[in-house]
Image (cartoon, rainbow, N blue to C red; front, side):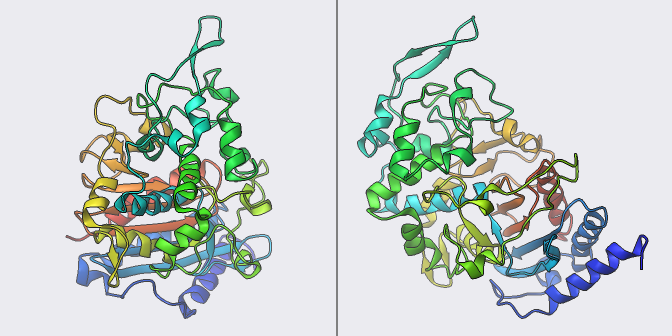
Length: 424
């Protein structure tokens, strides 16, 4: 059989498999209409991905939605491995990339609650090499000069990307100082966390600490701080304070062989330009537990994590954080004194600030997507996304294996589709 029906029939077959497989549900189930979500409008998600897969733009997806603490949508579409023909399922594991940052932030804040990691503590108290870093200042000849830090890098700066650090290789960072910095993928292969920090500390900061939001490797440094304070590898610490208490059984920095067989993989070539593409972490795991981008997990696990946050730090009777700490985490920490470049990283997020590991919506308008003030979110460079809206009591986690520019399209469209399904 050939022709336009083939992609849709293939999609239907895969969807049937995913829907009939009895994977455990991450949260109690409710009918969408009972919590103010239109079941009919939720079907648009299925139609959207049927079209995307029919056009060979994405291999597949998993979408998980909760409202008022109830699971109203949890479906898998298409293929987890388009080369081997492995169908997507709701227990497919995704390389979470920067969605790791939110979990690292929550874990680090458990130390803050114990009085072990004050936000205004100096990073150099834990990692002395950070205190030796100087700040690069561009000069008219296209080079730069060095000047001392006007104030120390604080733990607070690591959480909110105001440490003066950056990611090398980003298209929105073109200064001669930023050009010296490693990309996230390169940084993840820089030895142990201690060796990573020592190498990073040899570079000049791109800005004075506390002056500019610059999306950066600061979370990888935060992970190294957490290891120093806790005395444990980051993965072991997060498992202790977050993953095991929340029963996030497939979330890890080090997938087993069986788990790696369930990891979603992209098309070999980018559907937008035909060039080869891959997810670097699938070829080689990071050499340390990097807090910025190195975790793997299912969308069901991540939905449980998001539900814990929106419920004020507690899930199924297990308290991970206090309500006050969650409010602190999900409030804007940039204000007017810090240059806000959030929309430079996520162009559809005009009008957002940044909290402790999450972007935070400040007003109903400006952004290209619907949402409420107080909605918080962040996404992953390999095609995953997460957002939570306390006002709407809404939590959404979705996964695709789309490491190219299409990932940004799915971030925007999923938010449109989900909010478009709300009936009250």
